[in-house]
Length: 231
Image (cartoon, rainbow, N blue to C red; front, top):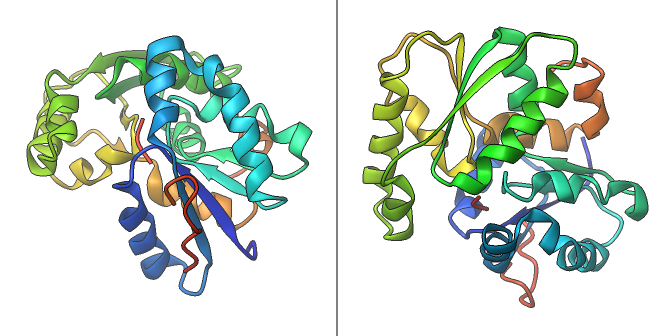
């Protein structure tokens, strides 16, 4: 297990989620949280590549430690900076994507944000290289508005209802970490995958992003780190 892990979030709602997962599954692990909502705001407005300079600066600030990026919209550009910093960067949804392509070719991706869909499709294509992966994507109408309003129950209910309405799929992917608890509300028999637990486990055991492509198993900025997002 890695000695310490930095988690980069774009929403503060993710901090207690990952703290609870640590306490449940990885007691004793040290997590440090960095929360920068502006990264998602800019990526939505200008595209993920627009946040590369800010990400490069943030990754330099946290030092030579592994980083888990919990925002699906910026995960790919963050991973692309790993070689120049000399330390691991893992997007939280990569282990989930690897499991999805293992389960079948007919993958339905649910997201609350349009900006999440293209990075998730590209990730599934990476993990499914050599397989006939056929992802279908859907933005859950009204879900993001509920999330931004702080109506977590309503947000999760809409996501769960969208999952229950899916037909002709081998697996359903909840593309954003904030959707994870909706998996416990669904009635469908189709497997429903979420990213936080698998992503945290992979990051703590030191798995680099490349390992999944090779087929291996599956603070507010400026404030002090808490030693112990979303998009």
